[in-house]
Image (cartoon, rainbow over all chains, first blue to last red; front, side):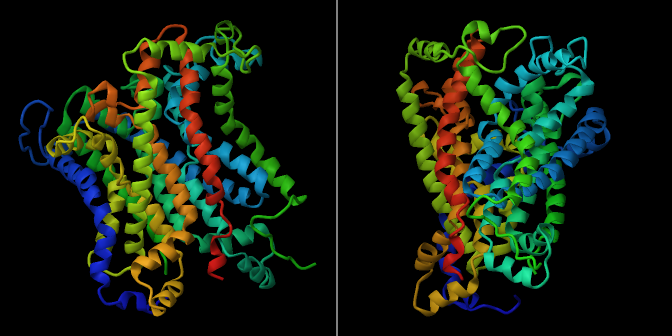
Length: 301
Length: 289
């Protein structure tokens, strides 16, 4: 699709485009861009939320890389582990489940889609009510009680304090809640693909559902695949609520401390806003690199 | 035996679907567990909430938790209906404005030509990658400078621009064939008309998905009530439910929390059930063929 379309050559197109964009851009600029720019500016200062910020150059960034033992020993490895499992894992799971749902007829599909999306609908509220009770550390907790009645363990495990279990639990809940808006977008994309393509492909020698998925479904919904990929990456690096909701901030021995929690810790507990801002700019960089890679994968050619 | 091709969205049940159902069923059960849990928990009487060993399913359902919740709300100075009203106004306004603004901007970014297009798309995507917590204080500063603190505007305006919604909508508009839009231009349609008559009807699934997304963001948002609004009478239901359940941290708290979660969850559930038909709208391409 290289040929230039007439759309681009319309007169006045330039001016009209700005009319369509203006309302969004106005609010986007005021409530998102300006605050983000201020935050990036603060990352070069020693702002502590009380005194006027003083310029410190790259000191915060240098400290983050060379001086922050907690960041290097706990926060970064935890975040990488979490992101590697929950990012691709959640993405593949979203795609496979959406694809499987599309093969079903309407009623079971609707019910299953609702149930699969429900963790995203309940997130936040469900976290405290549900998972904390599930993983309660004494024998009244559901998980402990089940495992004990099955004879897997004899003593209740203090799940949310034990450093061995905390990160795996956080990762599990991360995966559990990863059927989010990306999942919905993929589902909509698959269901909206042109059915005649599947018939044509069958004539051309596609033999099974798997080949259909690789040769027709995925190439036909690159925009949705890219959207879901970026959302998975952002979700994998930015979800910090699970750790803090389960175990507080900082988490016991930093066992499940993620970069976002580190930002919260410095920003709202120690009031080192400048340092917190620098950490979040670093996080932005990491997320940006990964989403650029996914953009290359799903580039429209 | 020639392979005929599996149709996406089959009209009726076929045998080949059984294996798919069997594969995804365990996952569906794990995912569904929490809803079941919240529903069961909300209707449990006191002794079942603290039963040992714990019981998952309620055996003698009661409305005790709900009556306790409403009793607690009656002791406060501001009636519950006020919070319901606030939340409804804020949520409805934001969802509609956000959808209109994102679809208009998405149309421009996808199908119109102008200077700075790619830069804008990249800025929008970078914005959704920036951790929200880091922007909280600068955001408070800008809202303060604008002088809209402690008004409905503080609830509504900051939540309307949602980069994720724009990104989503733009991706779907990319799939609308250029030829269709060109044909409309040749017939003398204006950009405005193309947006309304061609783009919007064809991206219904994206609009429905974005609506669910925006609704979630607004309905569960506590940031605006926490930081930008100080009058009790202007705060939202989510904020109120949260204070109610966290300050009552007694033994009764758990049941009340479950009841509150269920109440807050119901509107999301209803909205999803209404909109899922459009998300899984398989008729969308009929205008293109």
